[in-house]
Length: 317
Image 1: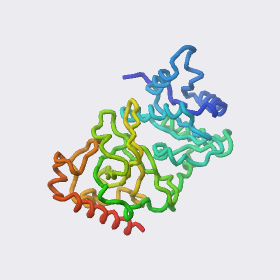
Image 2: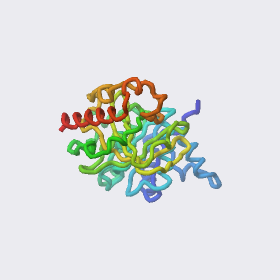
Image 3: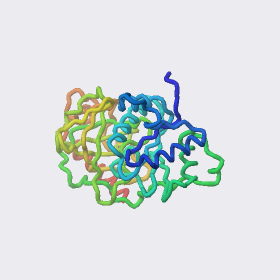
Image 4: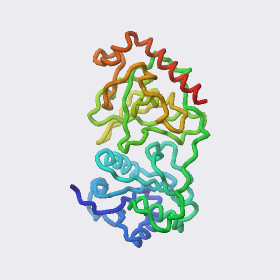
């Protein structure tokens, strides 16, 4: 097992370096061991290799959000996702002064409780919360202080175009699973009236990544619930060391705070998929036995599932 050498990795944009130096000094004064590139990377070392190595030695990662994440931080964030798949690394989004919310396109970060500095870095409550996130031990100063308010998305409209889609394009289904056990692709920061666009991920050795074509629709299910219908926006694949990504747009998502209250997937689909992989499953494939046993005609299934999602929309309105 790799020995943990640092308490927290400080992922940031170079534009925010002055603020990160100040945060680094404060964490050191609190007895923590933060990893900061300019303090740990020796001259002549390969920058990306050192960052990758550092991510493998930390207990937590603080993702600092300023005016922009920065190119290097985007690389670090994807490496952290890979790290989360294999080990439990705490991820702490940190909103630097002047930043009020997590950017809407950073759907992965929106799943985590954030730390917010507000107007100034002289915010000891924010440092106490950051220390708590890093160590898992709540400082005594926070005994009577609550966590910062989570972003309020309760007034967001239902993400649903289910009445407008071409149901004949519902051709694929995929099981998704977040490495931390939370709901994947929750996308809670979507503004009213917007249709969220995000990247859907397959494992590096996942099957069927390129099967859906632009305009095709895929049902996503997780924790035995149907949670999304997505439309593929193009045929392009983006490959990383830890996964392959496709750009999709959500055309249906539940408008419900507690997704655990959604009906079981067999009620929405008319059958219960018997697989747990994250591969693409073509509904028309002869090898998809559980689907073929339940539905003789693909068109009948497409009509049925659209009707079930419309009923969910009506029940949640």
